[in-house]
Amino acid sequence: MSATRALLLATLALALLAPSQPEAPVPSQTSQDLHGEVTETRGAARFYLFQIADDAVQVDVSLRNAEGDVELLASCGDAPPERDEDWSWGAQAEGDRATLSLTRHTESDLRSGPFLVEVRPVDPAGHHGARRSLPFTLRVDAVRLSAPRAIAPGRGVDDATAPEAGHRRDFAFELPAHASALRVDLVAAERDLDLLLSSQAPPLDRDGAQWSAATALGRESLVLDAGALKQISAGGRLYLAVVDPSLYDAPVKFRVVVTPGAAPPAEALALPALAQPATPRERALAAVVEIVAGDNVGSGTLVRDDGLILTARHVLGDLTGERGEITVALDLDPTAVTRDLFHAKVVESDAGLDLALLRITGGLYDQPLPKGYRFPACPVAFDGLPQLGDELVTIGFPEPGGIGTRAPVMYSRGVVAGFEREKAGLRLKTDAFVAGGSSGGAALDAGFRLVGVPLFTMSDSDRAATLGFLVPVMELPKTWRERIEARD
Image (cartoon, rainbow, N blue to C red; front, top):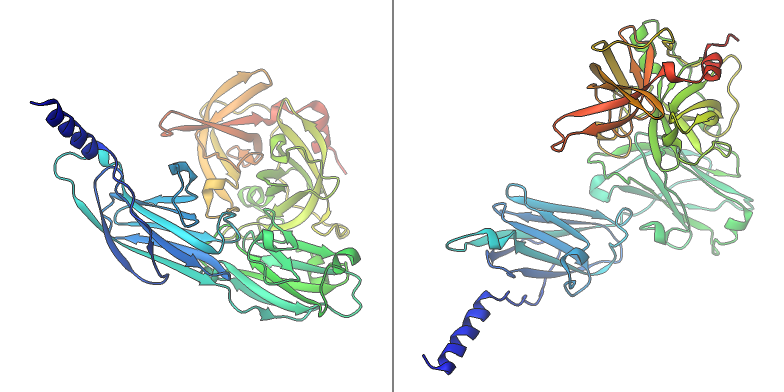
């Protein structure tokens, strides 16, 4: 074989092995089914370029009939990123479908303008023999901002976010004449919702909002003082968006009140009468509370009827509660998420034990507790350690226990599975369910008395088995026990 012929064959072989060059993006329209196919070849891909309108609040990408062998990638821009990890979003087909649902208020990378989608085979190098052609149907839908609902300051409005409207509800109102302050309150919300407020235009995201309240709370508040009101342009029109950060797949009901002045509306200040259950199980369930401390969400247990709470120290982070940073939410309905009702401060803290005692100081708006107000409290078992194999119940608000940023209460049964001696002291192990969000909650004996506080979990390599680790209440310092047991 001549050298020239050998060189030509080698060049041809390299060309066949080299990744194919990506095709140019196909300009495409939203809200249309696009039919295409891609082969199981390394480097094979199809690109589609869409234009997202300035008032789009949500973009939904759907890939259908894909036989589970393709994936989609998406990013804002008109050219593919140089590296795979630079794509903003991706989804691999499960069955015959892959989907992305992106909203402006949860995805900081989502913006108006060019929006590029790539469809390509999954791991083509792993296929042998004839390489198939994989057909698919791609569709991109953009949800546009709905017309804001007009509301009047001083009146409460009941409404709901809507998944089909971008998981949000928008409002518009006029700044009251001569107002020296203004506040917006979500006085009721079924789940964690956020507030975005602007005087320029309806705020599509936090960057477009002049003021925002975006914490793990459902009952958010925004207060604009005289200095903030000076930023409002002539005409005094304000735009408010109530948005769902968890993208719950059903409407989330809420009640919002816009109030002239800085004082909370009267309906926000009312505190519910708390039941005092007669049975030990119901009393324990009522005594377990949810703790919201900044971005942290955990659990706690009321151990005195005057509002003393035992929880895990790490749930609080660096917060002390002196400036209303620690919120206590009660479980008034086990079929729903808790209701944010009170503020608390730290009265005892032990970093080694990873425990803290909190005291409820007042309502969510720092209103004083009514005279004689009493909380349901769980009795604490200071009469000895539980034994190996004893029945154990855990109660808390674990993150995997629901959809969204806040979950309803979860009740689980197990046993005392073992003990562990650590530098900080003795730990109980249990096979009862404990997960993130359960920290600080309740571990109860057969009589529904508090015997331990969940701290963390450990799993095997396959996560097939998980153990929860608890601090037994017998490890509490003597002064803490005296505070819990003190008579009024």
